[in-house]
Amino acid sequence: MLTIGFIGAGNMAKAMMQGWAGNADIHQVVYSPNSGAQVAAELGLEAKQSALDVWAESDMVVLAMPPAQLEAVAKDLQLGIMMKPSVIVASVLGGVSLATLHAAFGEHVMVARTLPNVNVALKYGYTALAFDANMDQDVKGAIAALFLELGRTDELPEEQFGAVSALAGSGPAFVAAFAEAMTQAGIQAGIAPDTAARLAEQTVVGTARHMGDLKKDPMTLAHEVMTPGGSTAAGWEALEQGNLNGLVADAIQATMKKNAEFE
Ligand SMILES: NC(=O)C1=CN([C@@H]2O[C@H](COP(=O)(O)OP(=O)(O)OC[C@H]3O[C@@H](n4cnc5c(N)ncnc54)[C@H](O)[C@@H]3O)[C@@H](O)[C@H]2O)C=CC1
Ligand SMILES: O=C(O)[C@@H]1CCC=N1
Image (cartoon, rainbow, N blue to C red; front, top):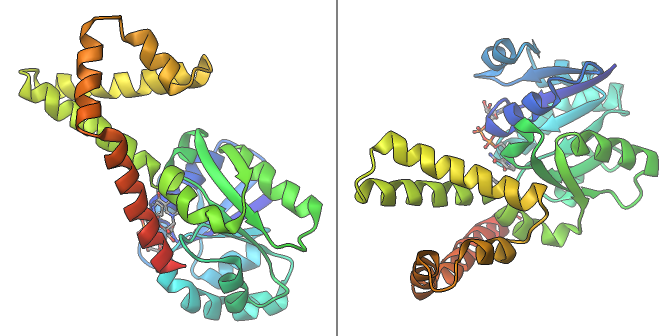
């Protein structure tokens, strides 16, 4: 039995807990000052009274609190790190580098920097991973296997994490924004709000599965839908005139700029 401990019980932590919940070989414990007990009860996990209690019981500790809490949490864990240095730290803290994590926890602590997205809740996530240069291959493999269970993963250079965070970490929000824009356009066109929302959601879900399951890239699928001289091509032209690509590029750049402020 492997014990994964969470420090923080917000949206990202919950998504990971949900993703690993069905695995009978994983025991999950959680501490969060406000919501830990409630989230643990909701998901059938064990709530702990402190970050130190989580550390004492865990093989791997997931740091999933706001990045600004890093120093405070590291201080709370000082005794645990001395008593049980074998615990692996998997940080999901946006913009917090391996170097910063080591500065907080000490050089000898095994640390992985991970960047998951909320779709890990249903094992359809994407997680970027970066490891200490000297981390043992077996430990790397074990961490990667855990995240692979939650969807796709890649080991990527840390300097790409700002861009990866914008595309894959923040990405679900941006795809959701497109679904919302379609819903609003449907309402404007006279469709009842709940029907418009259902149409938009099913279209986004179905399109994602179509590309994924049938292995089609976006433009192949788009061309299949665009009957030559038909109505989709007219709508596509409006998207191009409105510079959808430019707008998305701007959103990614703005997200990366903010990520760079955290680094
Ligand atoms: N939400 C997302 O899609 C993603 C979030 N992240 C990262 O995950 C981390 C958490 O983000 P969210 O879940 O979105 O935020 P959130 O606000 O939903 O959750 C933060 C959690 O940390 C807890 N917390 C605050 N101070 C604490 C402390 N001193 N000790 C223990 N727990 C404490 C809060 O009670 C709350 O449960 C951030 O570092 C963020 O960069 C990374 C990738 C994606
Ligand atoms: O918005 C944020 O700061 C975090 C990082 C990636 C997704 N959510």
